[in-house]
Image: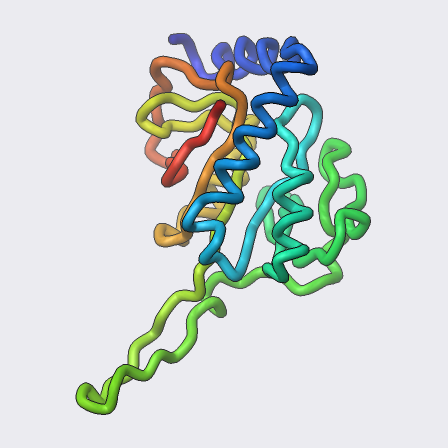
Length: 198
């Protein structure tokens, strides 16, 4: 238990202390789970983070997504908020907020509302509807609990970004040591739809 600040500090220390063999094994397992995931296969758009410090590596996920011709976007911190911009290679990223790799902000920005398309049903119905193109966000975090509550890094960038996007499919990933028994959620906290920590 403890405050979010206390849990974050304790869990990040554990994550920092992982041995290379443990780290490699977990990264391989989590990567496999994502690449085999139904949401990943169906997604035309992937919102992915660039690993920083001792975070679990997303390099292999990025390589596969680009190779599979998915549209890949990564976050850029802009003031108190975060936006996602399209990249075509890891080399498109530059050091940004706190030294974290991010797009330079000159490429195509991801706009969730534009991921809708007109769908015409069969002629018997003579109706149209709006369908969402499949989007998957793979997100980081400092700590998670079994009810999918999440502790980020203190600025609330993901909570703010997801606040008006309740239908966006989200999977948080990390190491097994990042799972805790209980996190007290605030009203503005947004749970990922799934958490994969191995």
